[in-house]
Length: 144
Image 1 (cartoon, rainbow, N blue to C red):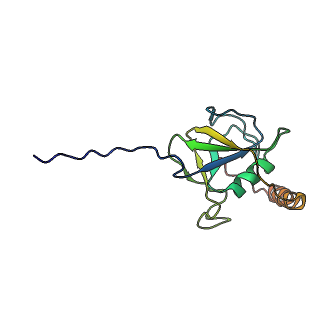
Image 2 (image 1 turned 30 degrees about the horizontal axis):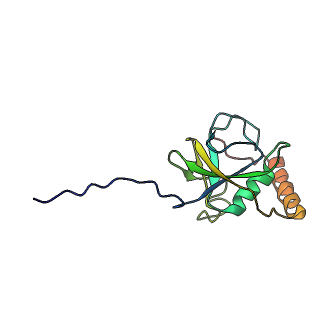
Image 3 (image 1 turned 45 degrees about the vertical axis):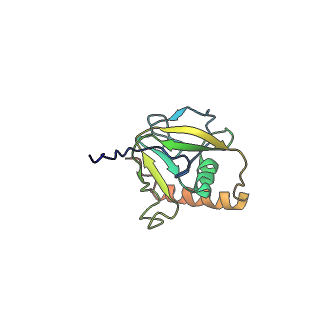
Protein backbone atom coordinates (compact mmCIF):
# COMPACT_ATOMS: atom_id res chain seq x y z
CA UNK A 1 0.00 0.00 0.00
CA UNK A 2 1.35 3.40 -0.99
CA UNK A 3 1.48 5.97 1.79
CA UNK A 4 0.42 9.48 0.85
CA UNK A 5 2.97 12.04 1.83
CA UNK A 6 1.42 15.01 3.57
CA UNK A 7 2.87 18.43 3.02
CA UNK A 8 2.38 21.25 5.39
CA UNK A 9 3.60 24.79 5.59
CA UNK A 10 6.13 25.17 8.36
CA UNK A 11 7.47 28.57 9.37
CA UNK A 12 11.18 28.75 8.78
CA UNK A 13 12.94 31.34 10.93
CA UNK A 14 15.07 33.78 8.98
CA UNK A 15 13.73 32.64 5.61
CA UNK A 16 13.16 36.36 4.97
CA UNK A 17 14.01 39.15 7.36
CA UNK A 18 11.79 42.23 7.35
CA UNK A 19 12.43 45.54 9.08
CA UNK A 20 10.22 48.42 10.21
CA UNK A 21 11.83 51.80 10.96
CA UNK A 22 9.98 54.16 13.31
CA UNK A 23 10.25 56.40 16.35
CA UNK A 24 7.62 54.42 18.26
CA UNK A 25 8.76 52.62 21.42
CA UNK A 26 7.40 49.10 21.01
CA UNK A 27 8.03 45.72 22.63
CA UNK A 28 8.77 42.27 21.24
CA UNK A 29 5.50 40.41 20.71
CA UNK A 30 3.46 43.58 20.07
CA UNK A 31 1.67 44.10 16.78
CA UNK A 32 2.10 47.06 14.47
CA UNK A 33 -1.36 47.67 13.01
CA UNK A 34 -3.23 49.97 10.67
CA UNK A 35 -5.59 52.61 12.00
CA UNK A 36 -3.12 54.70 13.98
CA UNK A 37 -1.92 58.08 12.75
CA UNK A 38 0.79 57.75 10.13
CA UNK A 39 4.32 58.99 10.77
CA UNK A 40 4.33 60.50 7.27
CA UNK A 41 2.38 62.75 4.92
CA UNK A 42 -0.79 64.28 6.36
CA UNK A 43 -0.61 62.03 9.45
CA UNK A 44 -3.95 60.49 8.50
CA UNK A 45 -5.00 57.20 10.02
CA UNK A 46 -2.84 54.64 8.27
CA UNK A 47 -4.68 52.31 5.91
CA UNK A 48 -1.45 50.38 5.38
CA UNK A 49 1.66 49.62 7.37
CA UNK A 50 5.08 49.35 5.79
CA UNK A 51 8.11 47.10 6.00
CA UNK A 52 11.27 46.49 4.03
CA UNK A 53 13.71 43.68 3.45
CA UNK A 54 16.69 46.09 3.47
CA UNK A 55 18.23 47.62 6.55
CA UNK A 56 19.04 50.83 4.64
CA UNK A 57 15.37 51.46 3.79
CA UNK A 58 14.41 50.78 7.43
CA UNK A 59 17.04 53.29 8.57
CA UNK A 60 15.45 55.89 6.27
CA UNK A 61 12.05 55.02 7.75
CA UNK A 62 13.34 55.63 11.27
CA UNK A 63 15.17 58.83 10.32
CA UNK A 64 12.24 60.34 8.42
CA UNK A 65 9.47 59.37 10.86
CA UNK A 66 7.79 62.34 12.53
CA UNK A 67 7.88 62.73 16.27
CA UNK A 68 10.40 63.17 19.02
CA UNK A 69 11.07 59.57 20.02
CA UNK A 70 14.29 57.66 19.50
CA UNK A 71 14.82 56.15 16.06
CA UNK A 72 14.10 52.42 16.25
CA UNK A 73 14.36 49.52 13.83
CA UNK A 74 12.31 46.45 14.55
CA UNK A 75 12.49 42.99 13.03
CA UNK A 76 8.93 42.16 12.04
CA UNK A 77 6.97 39.20 10.75
CA UNK A 78 3.96 39.83 8.50
CA UNK A 79 0.75 38.11 9.62
CA UNK A 80 -0.85 38.31 6.18
CA UNK A 81 -0.12 39.15 2.56
CA UNK A 82 2.23 42.00 1.64
CA UNK A 83 2.44 43.97 -1.62
CA UNK A 84 4.94 46.34 -3.25
CA UNK A 85 4.91 49.86 -1.75
CA UNK A 86 3.57 52.11 -4.54
CA UNK A 87 5.31 55.13 -3.00
CA UNK A 88 8.66 53.68 -4.02
CA UNK A 89 8.14 50.94 -6.59
CA UNK A 90 7.57 51.42 -10.29
CA UNK A 91 7.60 55.20 -9.84
CA UNK A 92 10.85 56.06 -8.10
CA UNK A 93 12.65 52.71 -8.14
CA UNK A 94 11.33 50.34 -10.84
CA UNK A 95 11.69 46.69 -9.90
CA UNK A 96 11.56 47.42 -6.14
CA UNK A 97 15.33 47.44 -5.37
CA UNK A 98 14.51 48.89 -1.91
CA UNK A 99 12.40 45.78 -1.24
CA UNK A 100 9.71 48.01 0.28
CA UNK A 101 6.27 46.57 0.93
CA UNK A 102 2.97 47.39 2.59
CA UNK A 103 0.08 45.46 4.12
CA UNK A 104 -3.30 45.90 5.76
CA UNK A 105 -2.42 43.01 8.07
CA UNK A 106 -0.46 43.48 11.32
CA UNK A 107 3.27 42.91 11.68
CA UNK A 108 4.45 41.08 14.78
CA UNK A 109 7.60 42.49 16.36
CA UNK A 110 10.07 39.64 16.76
CA UNK A 111 13.23 41.61 17.57
CA UNK A 112 15.00 44.93 17.44
CA UNK A 113 18.16 46.02 15.65
CA UNK A 114 20.01 47.96 18.33
CA UNK A 115 23.30 48.62 16.55
CA UNK A 116 23.08 50.38 13.19
CA UNK A 117 24.67 53.33 11.42
CA UNK A 118 22.40 56.15 10.34
CA UNK A 119 22.87 58.37 7.32
CA UNK A 120 24.97 61.53 7.62
CA UNK A 121 23.18 64.70 8.76
CA UNK A 122 23.75 66.10 5.25
CA UNK A 123 22.06 63.09 3.63
CA UNK A 124 19.08 63.30 6.00
CA UNK A 125 18.73 67.05 5.37
CA UNK A 126 18.90 66.53 1.60
CA UNK A 127 16.21 63.82 1.79
CA UNK A 128 13.95 65.97 4.01
CA UNK A 129 14.45 68.96 1.69
CA UNK A 130 13.52 66.79 -1.30
CA UNK A 131 10.38 65.54 0.45
CA UNK A 132 9.43 69.14 1.39
CA UNK A 133 9.82 70.17 -2.26
CA UNK A 134 7.56 67.32 -3.37
CA UNK A 135 4.98 68.42 -0.78
CA UNK A 136 5.14 72.01 -2.07
CA UNK A 137 4.37 70.63 -5.53
CA UNK A 138 1.38 68.70 -4.18
CA UNK A 139 3.05 65.30 -4.35
CA UNK A 140 2.65 63.33 -1.14
CA UNK A 141 2.63 59.74 -0.01
CA UNK A 142 0.03 57.45 -1.51
CA UNK A 143 -2.27 56.60 1.39
CA UNK A 144 -5.21 55.02 -0.45
